[in-house]
Structure formats: structure tokens, C-alpha cells
Amino acid sequence: MTRLADRLPDFPWDRLAPYAATAREHEDGIVDLSVGTPVDPVPAVIRDALAAATDTPGYPLTAGTPALREAVSAWAAATLHADIAPSAVLPVVGTKELVALLPLLLGLGPSDRVVIPELAYPTYDVGAQVAGCEVVAADSTVQLGPERVSLVWVNSPSNPTGKVLGVEHLTKVVEWARDRGAIVVSDECYLELGWEAEPVSILDPRVCGGSHEGILAVHSLSKRSNLAGYRAGFVLGDPTLVGSLLEARKNLGLMVPQPVQLAATAALGDTAHVTVQKERYARRRDHLLSAFLDAGFAVEHSEAGLYLWLTRGEACWDTVAWLAQRGILVAPGDFYGARGARHVRVALTATDERVAAAVRRLSRP
Image (cartoon, rainbow, N blue to C red; front, side, top):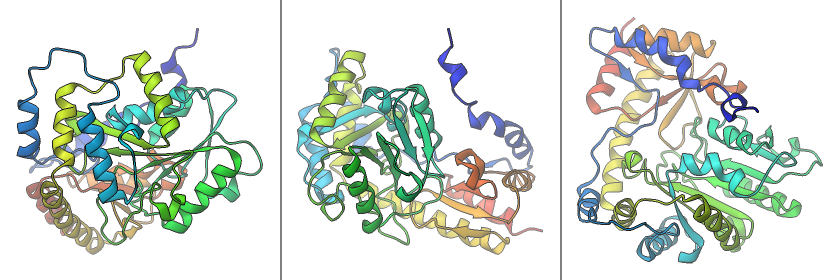
């Protein structure tokens, strides 16, 4: 019997441990820009909602509370410009869990091909491998040829590059997939963090023609509301696909805790904290981008999202080592695919004090 763990790649961040140890030896401590984990407080409106919901002894609904699904529907209308019925919304236990399990939950297997971006969040690949699918990395439908495809992942704004896919590009993907009976799933977890471009949802009628058939969008409250620790996300789109996922998740007991559902409802109903958080990230981005450019780095894409995609024109691990000597930890680009071999990903998720420390260190020879 082959264990599942034996079929999966080594966890990439384990390879970064020696460089983290080097960075921690800096006299002023480490500046960790390697992982996009929130560092700012959970907004009070969300914490208050969670605290008020602690007396919930019964099992939560896998489908989500009516209030949460209605809140997502209203948010989608205002933010995604998409008309989504509450019944076409499904809360999930953090979107990484959904990404990792989605091919399996959709019933895909060894006879199915899953397309992922050439530079991609590693869990797209992991999820396909869990289901035993064939994985193809491609950024253009021209690369795919005539073979059958079952699932296409798109990610805009991109992790790791921050690239934004426009209406024309997304429309071509949807049309291509529909012609072949493939499902398109768009990871849009950074959609509310546009800097130099305005991200667009795959559910936008300009992209999908007003029909959500065969398409799903994945969203998270981790970034826009600092709720990574709450594991609060949701998937929405094609009602038939959402219904199928619901039935599978009910059988597997995959349900978001009731207090988290109520906190998520509060988060979706408040826009003030999202504005405040985006302003924080904008300031940090400005400081880090200027410092890296002054230190001789080049930036590519990075129009949106929580990362800067940078290069010094050398192997990514050499750049990781150079920065670690200065107490700054970043992610090597090859974590995300072979095309990242000469880039590093720099997260904006550090406190103002740590960002200022990184800026000082980058200004020194």
C-alpha cells in the first residue's frame, strides 16, 4: 500500500529552514517576509461577533447559516459585480483546504487532466495529486493541445507574481473550457488588494456572459480581514457544482464552526476595516518596493495582491542567501514553478516596525 504522503512533494518551506536560522542571527532580529500571514489585529467588529457566538453547542450547518450565505451574496454583488444566489455559496474551512480537496470532491481521478498556472500556489498541484490526476502547467490554452481537460485553475491576482488577468484573458479561458466541458476554478483570494491594476472576478458578467455554468470562484477572509487563524473562506458560482460540493462535504463532515460563520458574516458586512487594512498594506508596499529597487532589484508584475515578485538576475537561492545575511527572509521563486528560478517572492505582511527594519538593512552595502 502506498501512503498518500509518499505521493506528495516535500513541504517546500522545510527547505527554507537553514536560511531562516541565518536571518534570526541578525543583531536586530529577523524580518520574515517569506509567508503571507497576517500580523495586524483582527478588527473589533469581527472579534465581538465571535465572542457573542461562543455558546453554540450544536453542530454547525455544512451549507452555512442563511445569514452567512446572504452576506456573501450581497458582498459578491457589490465587490464582484456578480449576481449570486445564496444557495450558490458554500463556506469552507479555509481556502487551502478547499484547493487541496477540490479535485477529489469533484470526483476527478487518474483519467482526468488538471491545468494549473506555470507559476502557481503549490497546493493546486498537491490537490490534483491527491486525486491521482495528471497535472499540466500552462498559462495559455494554445499550450494544451487537443487532449481532454477536466479542470482549469486560474489565479488572479496571482500568488506569487501579483499579476492581474484582464477581462479578455479570462473570457478566453471560460469560452475555451466551456467548449470542452471543463470546469474553471478561479482563486481570487487577493481580489480586493489591487494596486496598479483593478482585478476582475471570473463571475463578472463581462467575463462569463452572465452565466456561471461550469465556473467557480474561491475567496478568503484571511487577507482582507486578518482572519487566517479563523479559517474562513467560501466558494461560489455554478449552483450545480456548489450543490455537488455541498453533498460531498456533508458526507465527509467538512463544516465551518458556527462561531466562525457568525464572525465571517460580520466581516462581510463591514467595509471600513477592509479600507484600513488595504491602506496599511499600501504603505508597506511603497516602502519595500522603493527599498528593493534602490538595492538593485527589478520588480515584475506585482500589480496587486500581497507580494512583490523580484529578481537580481541570479539564481533565487543565491538571492535568498544574500537577504538572509541581512536578516531578511523571503521565499525562493522556484517554490512556485521552474519559471521562478531567478525570482523571489516578498510578502507585505510584516509590521510597520519590521518593514522599517528591512528598509534600513537594504540601504546598507
